[in-house]
Image 1 (cartoon, rainbow, N blue to C red):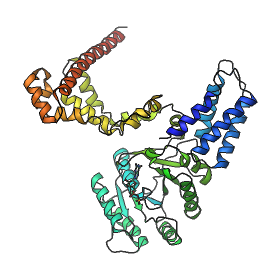
Image 2 (cartoon, rainbow, N blue to C red):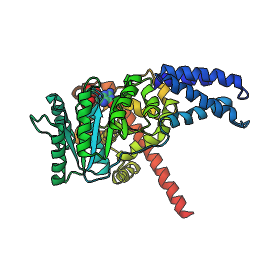
Image 3 (cartoon, rainbow, N blue to C red):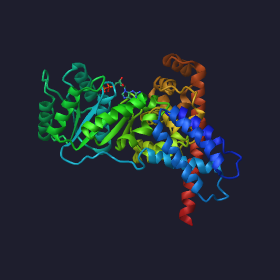
Image 4 (cartoon, protein in one colour):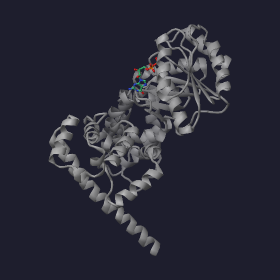
Length: 440
Ligand code: GDP
């Protein structure tokens, strides 16, 4: 995400390295590079110009403390300005109404249907809602089928009317059904075309007028850069939507759409899609996104993701096992599965400050744990619980069974033993602290 922009901005800040103070001249030089970085990121020329102008005013107007280096000051100003450009504050979707009706619009291929599924999943698992998905694409039976499959995967009902050619009727009937069945959110996936045409716009407008949605979300592929911005403008002129969903941000190395959309349509980005999997959906926090663009990582989101997977009960149980040196391969496997649920490893690692750049050219497989899992799965339950059983012949059997080799098995067992020893010491240390704290 945003790798190119990050690299170029950093290069421009370097121009200020070694400079004692901010001057008209060194600011102008730096901002020339910042502007070029923005243009290369496919940010609209006018936006890039006013952006650098704002930064210039702030930098020159600032009473520079001696303690702050000009390069640091510039990073801070650019950071705040980037966050501002992307909308400043996080704005959540409106879930008023019962059912809350959410209309999804966008071009074909933008990721509308995938987003509808992701949103249903998020609302169900994180907000305890009971969504109903509605397939309103009357032209493409394949799209209806796709939504049905998604619904099945996430355990959310999908409303369809086979053969119907009337999206307004389908949407109204779906809402009626939702009320009967107790679905408190209705997500309507509309038909898209490859390009904007009047018929499509008329159709979505008609659905909008009939169902009076509480929230209209416009979905757009971030990799299309300026085209994304132009499409957003046309949809907004016609639909006056409430928020933008930027999909495929995982493949967007430039970031032009993310940076420009807000100031062109004056509507907040509410979600970003970061992968094909159904949990690859995040709320959009401008401040955190600015952190990421500048390679500062995003610890807050990382901690939030971890907390979502965090189970207090389980954690207490683990703590006890660790202290008693009973942490087993079964526990280890569970931990791996929790980490996997948090999302793509490279994205996660990129949230650690400084890590994004370090990992830029490193391939991290989506399934980096594949071998470890295979090895543990090839162990018997008794072996997982008591690794001391693992003698030479058992290790050989496990290597064969998991399609790995004896070295890999040995390495994992050795690392596991070391980790276990260390964790025991750490958890004892914690208990000791606690005891001392209580005593004092
Ligand atoms: P629709 O025609 O607008 O409904 O688009 P789809 O939901 O069918 O998505 C089009 C393609 O984009 C599919 O192959 C999706 O898997 C893919 N896609 C959707 N969202 C994302 C995303 O956030 N990241 C990536 N990498 N692919 C996505």
